[in-house]
Length: 274
Image (cartoon, rainbow, N blue to C red; front, side, top):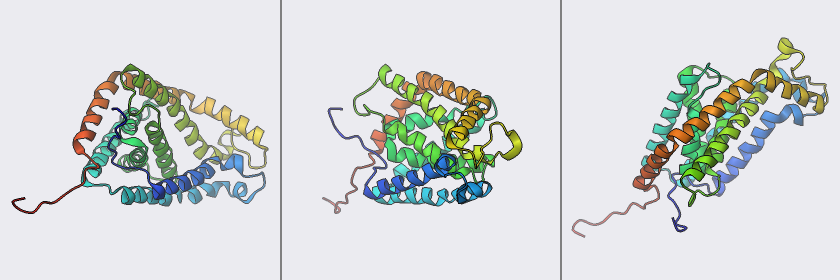
């Protein structure tokens, strides 16, 4: 390692970083508006329309992907790796869907983000969730939220410390710990995307537009405990188990593929007979 910069298929430059920050700000507003909008505001008054309004996040996500690709000069090798990993993640997701929240795709996103970096991680997470939605018929106003949350999830793995030097059991424990916590964070964030639109389905834990923030926060915590704690725990535990058991092999394979792809190698042309 010795401080040598590892090749990355997508490196975050000024333009893609600015786009990510913009999407992040809009995403925070899109997920957290029940606690950010004051009672009686126009946003709270149109709570049932909010999913369609914030579905415009999809446009910003596409802009982030385009900015990252154009700025990094994403070559055919990186596109191929993106396609393979996104297809693998999309295929893994339905395997455990509907069974205690067991979703094996999460461990693949953690390891891929770790090896290939935060830029590639965000693109991979978003594209994988988009492909998964097409595969399972899960296209709807919630899809942009899923794409953004998965992009954050995978990008976070690429931002973990020790990417150049940390190896072995210590790295696996770091990735497993991140996967465990991030799996709960993903579930909580996605709860925010659907909780305000329950209406009268669960009056004791539903979002109340005119209620103060502490009251709605208590309702949201109760909602998470009552509806998704078991699913989030299953997702988190499976991510840890797969990371510990399959992590060493997959990390080696991803790093070997990254070295051989030589994403940042400049293409040169020589005259005949040179």
